[in-house]
Picture 1 (cartoon, rainbow, N blue to C red):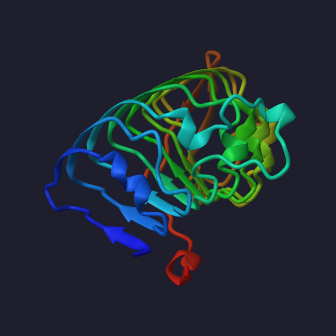
Picture 2 (spheres, one colour):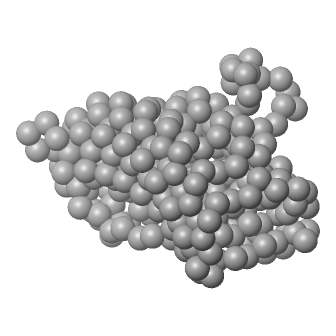
Picture 3 (cartoon, one colour):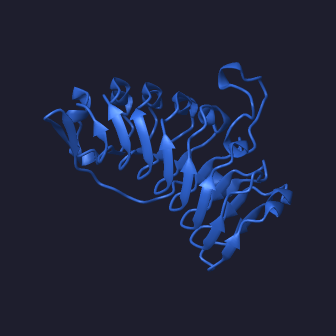
Length: 240
């Protein structure tokens, strides 16, 4: 079995640790259920699609799922892989997961096209390594408790289509590298504590779903168009 879809079946209880034994699993869809407890420390390393959105998961995301264990990303060994390093889509939104993002998450999950972690209780700073997610098109970490400045490395991902950082506690200046988001059709940065915006963002075409307004009294005020989607690349349907 390479795909398992159990979404919207009113499932409850915890995720069994035996999921790891499904060693050929490529796609796991468990969204819109009532699953509780924490994520198991191990999942099939073959997974390319993982969607557990809209459940009642709690606790931290085990670092064994999205971090090199005991290995700093600056000194990573060529060929080292994290447990879920093959993921293309990861959606854990709409739960009550807490904890911080590992400093090397962007290197371990460098194949991601979609990362959706919105509406959880995640906190801490956004690591610089997110700029290593060279395939990323859709980033949604809105409505968490992330704080501190935005890493300028995020602006290196010039092919991003959707960026939603709304509803956090992010501070400081919005990096000038965000002016590189020429392919972005939705940029949501509202309900944070940013200082003034780079001029390039203030003049972007509102018809492209930016709908930005200029700085006012040292704060950025934003209106925007929001959507709630999980971007799935067409190639996911031709996985073998």
